[in-house]
Structures are given as C-alpha cells and as structure tokens.
Length: 170
Length: 236
Image (tube, rainbow over all chains, first blue to last red; front, side):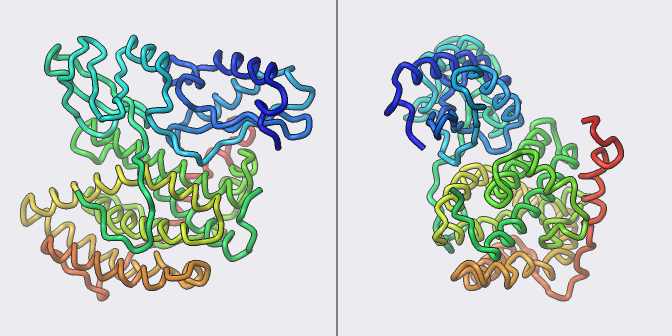
C-alpha cells in the first residue's frame, strides 16, 4: 500500500477536495475539518481511505462510509475501500475552519490548554454540566455570562495503558 | 494485516467482544433507570461506546467487513456467545447496575492494560483507543457507587445485596484461557480482586464468596439481540 501523496499529488488533491463535501451527519462540518481522515493510499488500483472515528461507538460511521464511497466514486477503476483506524482522535484534529463552523452553530471546541470560549457571547464563562451530551462526541456546559446552555466537543481522554496500575483516581 | 494470528488470541478477543456486546446492549436497554435525563443519556452513551468496542474487537477477529461482523453476532446460536455471568447479567435495579458496572469496568481496565503487553500492535492500538473512552465510564460508576452507598442505610443494604449476588462470580472475569494468552494477567487479576475488595470495604461493603451468585441471563439477552433479525429477515 502506498500513500497517495507519494504517487499522485493531483489525485490526492482531488480526493481531499471530494472528501471535503462529506459531512458528519451529526455535525454540520466536513469529515476533513472534523479531522477524521487518517490516511488515503493506493493498494494496486484500489483507493483505501482510513477514517478516524471520534468515538468507536459512533452510530454515524455507516453513513459516513457510504458517503465517502459515493464521493470518491469513479476516481479510480476499482471500488473504494473504507477502513476505520484505531488512531486516536483528539480535539486538535479539528481544523480552524471546522472550529469556526462549529462555533457558528453553537458548539464550542475546547482549546489545547483546556479553556473554552462560549460560542454565543465569546466569553470564557462556561461551567461544565456533565460529561455526556446529545452525541458521543459532545458534552454539556452552561455559560454563566449569557445564561445559555452550550454543546461542547468531547474527545476520548489521552491515556497510556499500563498493566496493573492503581485504580483511576476520581 | 491483522496481528491477531493465533487461535487462542482470537478466542480471547471474541470473549471480550461478546462481553462488551452484552454490557452495551443491557446498558442501552436500561437507559431510564437514572435519576434524570442527563444521567440516562450517559447510560445510553456508555452503552453505545461498549457496542463500538465490541465491534472493534470483532474487526480484529472477523475482519473489518460489517456484514461479517453482524453475522458473527446476529446469525449465531446462543450457545456460541462467551463471557462471564457478570457481563451477561440483566441488573433490574439501580444498585445492581452500579455493582455490575463498578466490578466489570474496573476489571476490564486491568484486562485491557494486559493486552498492550502482547506482541500484537493492532490489538494494543485498539485497546488504547478504548481506554480513552472508558475513563469517562469508570469515573461515572465510581462516583455513583460512592454517592449511592453514602446516601442512606437502605441504599447501602441494597448495594450490599447486589454485591452478594455478583462477587462469587468475579473470577470469571479472569478465566484461565485469558491468563494463558496474556502473561501476567493471572497476577493482575488477583491484584484487582484484592484492590477492589479494599475499595468496597472502605465504602462499608463486604465481599463474600458465600453469596447467592448471579442468574444466567445470556439466553434472554441473545434473544433480544436477535429478535428482529430472526423474525423479520431481510427487512432491516
């Protein structure tokens, strides 16, 4: 299997452009801006797209697979293969454009330093309201400044697994 | 290319997949036990996570093809499903749910950690990925177990009754087949048992092997899993 960028830059650009039209059905941004593209490679004549799910149980995966195949149809002679990668998904994978688009629909994306700006009033007055939300990749918060409930993007926690470690601290 | 190449490893991963499948199915089915909408959303979300983890394990053993993964769940006889009675327990009460998940999630954390020691990079990558999601679960179950047992003596007594039912079966979470595949898992299991016992005793609970044990709810859960598939074939 060969990374597409190594063999055909024009094809790579076309693939990325087409994938940019595929939206996550639970979020109004493209899977490219959501940081879900793991890799695109050529395996003989087959295009193999590895996608990175936000959460492993995300029910949108089936729809995204379908939309990716449809978007890339006809680019190469053989059917497109979509695989799901175990690569970690984290908030920094969301592009600046993705962050702006999510903010515009009222969804906050925490910065790398953990601070969160309210997508409605722009202040940092958000208070966490639990770790769970309307989708697996969102949680709830409340803005004390503009008194508005806010959806906040959530990622799996970055952890290293070690055998026999002490129980997780609360 | 999958690094899952030996039959014992396939068997072990299949067992973990079936346990996560059962746990996820039951969690989504009991979404509604919680005290408010947000907690019930949490139950449902954790159930979805577990179903995703079951799929991740099966993708390592059956392959990435969704049709094959689904067939391995929905088109097999009930007796082919594996795993502990705890995982396949239908805990029809909040306190039983807490005990089930506290025991299962803490043990599963130890088991996942053991898999990172295998010479199987894609298994290690998958369990690392799961771990980041499971941390939210562990925090949830620890918090609610603590809160519930400290609420009043009646809650403590109900949790104790659930623990009396579940504790005699916890060794099934670390079966010999698992320890044969993963070096050090038997010791890690013993260590988990001692640590868990200490944590529960600190909450005022007793861990006794003389309890009543758990029913085997496997047939009921498998029937629920396969109900529509078998009765309305081809219409889904």
